[in-house]
Image 1 (cartoon, rainbow, N blue to C red):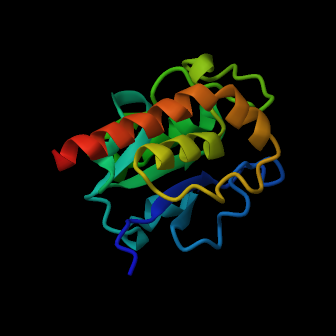
Image 2: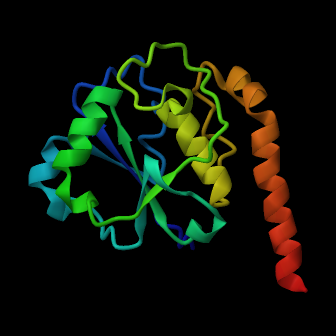
Amino acid sequence: MNTTLPTCIIRHRRENLKKCSLRGLEGKEDFVFFLYPDCVQTATLLPDLSRYVVLDLEGEELSAKDSDCGLVLIDATWRLAGKMTKELHFLHHLPKRAIPQGFQTAYPRRQLDCKNPDAGLASIEALYIAHTIVKRDCSSLLDNYYWKEEFLQKNKSNLQLIVASQKVMAIASTL
């Protein structure tokens, strides 16, 4: 039985699905999608978010201690994501977690509206890193991502560091 909380993705209705990096995850049981702005009026249809954290550019770094938490991801352009975050009041009380610095996107775009362009990952890239950190299965997450190989190559050493630190923590917990 899977006791892991599903990843909640709140997607802006104007998100271009032809360019959306999350295509293919919609039918997976570990992911639930909600359409913005509809979810603002129907917040009662959302799962209980009391054990969730919001992936954000600000906040404490996401870490293995968040493994029991569910993840919320806002899926939109940078400009629209900022507006959504302000309007989604039911997320304001949730802890914000940031992806550790140093990761690079492979998604070819100009990030004019991003507060920190160097940290401007595609949604699927952020999810892959987050799932790696909280020790969730991410083996098929990048299957439909066109820039999968480039992303993995650019971030190979950072991803290896995460996995190595998890192994050290696992060994230390047995001592």
